[in-house]
Image 1: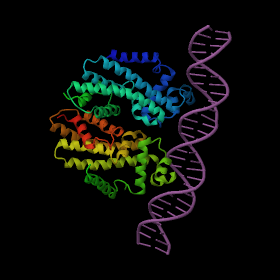
Image 2: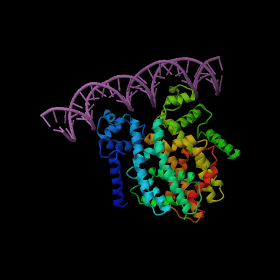
Image 3: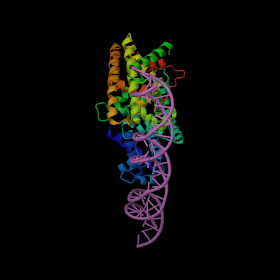
Length: 209
Length: 209
DNA sequence: TTACAAACCAAGCGCTTGCTTGGTAAAGTG
DNA sequence: CACTTTACCAAGCAAGCGCTTGGTTTGTAA
């Protein structure tokens, strides 16, 4: 991926951090979130102890609770911020796309990059550590996801219309969600297949040519 | 799904249980496995305590260790048996199929049914509770999965050849794996969409017509 | 230099966890 | 009938868990 694209992603983080929408990744709290996401992904939320996180950051376990009220507040923060961040990216990409097909391709690319790139740990946690949140926190995150999914459905419907295809968007989006999120278990960022190539393959699942 | 198909599945369980390849679901141990799978799926392995399982079965928590040496032996047994069972089903269906396309459709159908039907709890656990196994047990299960995946790759390649399509089977199978296993989170067994219809939709992702 | 908040430490509390132990009751087997 | 095996109970231990507490250090700005 081109350098300016990577820079754009960093700029967005900085901008969102300045607005207080996400935690500055360079702050003490931000570093803690990143390390926690890494551990939660690698070992699972329940198997990761606050002592593990503290050791990874280089502080005492009790000090964690200066930044977060509880362990599952950490999990919630990871999930919330990764949705907020990717939502902003997605909206921008969809607005910039010239065709409906390319808007959909951009979304696929974005989700693949979210799952396998910088926010990969957080995205994996979002997808697979769902049940570890308390019920009310689950509802809160579900609300955010609803917005995210609305943008997907809309974009997908436009792309299907443009290609003169009829399909059940509900079913198709869910099949695609699984296909894309599952890449976290097998896709190798340093392998031969680029994210863009993989995105083209995934688009072919939806839009026949 | 037709009654005789359901009966065939029960017959297979009985036959495998008689051979000692899986635990008889009617035995004390078998009931424990089923209840454990249900809980592991609903709450996750780590959040499910041996006391939870015992209460569900109706025995004391210590009595569990008469049947299994440790908690993660239960997890391993659930995973092992669901692979063995579905492997037998898949082999039979592939052998009976008249075309390569139908063999692939049968596999898709089988996996969807495995994920959403009788073995749904166990399959979800197999897919999502992976990291909770000890390392050597992970390797053991991985060996079984390798056989399972070999049958998939082979069948998929035949179907692509038959349809005069070229594609990367490695990538395509993994995209499909994600799409199918993710159905566990949204597919409603009692909804309007049947497993067979969903399987046709999933086949369309792979084989264009 | 003083003042103050943010970041962190050292120690440990109370609870839950997987698992062990020594024993009992019932069912199967010759 | 005696004997073995299977299935289970009642009680509790040792370890690990999230989290609290009271106090100390570090950074910042007037």
